[in-house]
Length: 109
Image (cartoon, rainbow, N blue to C red; front, side, top):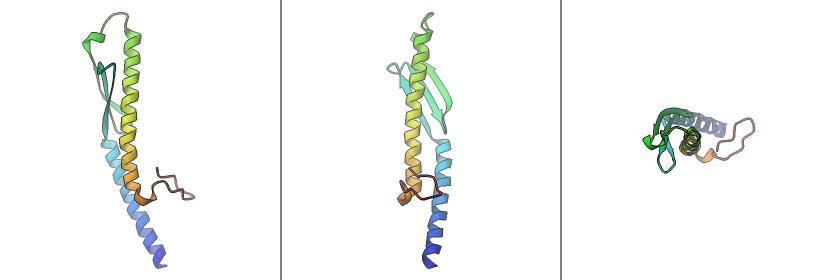
């Protein structure tokens, strides 16, 4: 029973670390760029767009398709960076249980 108590304490500590990581993830931010920095998009938390910056040189009539492509590419870059940050936070929170496949529990990175 002593081992079960220690296991329960570890599980509670991990649960707290995961909750802390989720709170930090909600505050994490990342920027993505495209077109050599002509378009920049900033994301926060799960992917909320907080800023879009477009270089004035892209504001040319008839260039809407190019601008749309650059915006999509910048968003994809920012999302990839934000996901990397959030994955690191979750792996740190999971600690030694990261990567374990425990029946009945989601896989922890």
